[in-house]
Length: 114
Image (tube, rainbow, N blue to C red; front, top):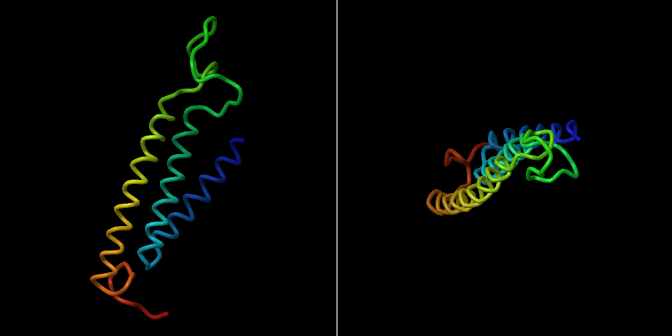
């Protein structure tokens, strides 16, 4: 499970960085979205990677991460998802306004060679 999650985080992070370095603004926005997904998965995995364990402390068990999953990373990821959605919507509005003013969707505003 840990290897699969590490590979998914690595692929999302790598694809996000690759898209951020592209010349078109929509690709940059999609790269930021993929990078935020990778960071959210990383934070979410810091809680614990256990299956069939409750997220609360049960009576009779010590309050340690061996017996329950930490709810703080889950709350942080939920907040990050909402903030990420709002900033993505803002980026798309700025992208459309920039395209309307400059007539191109390139990051520097100048159309390069194909």
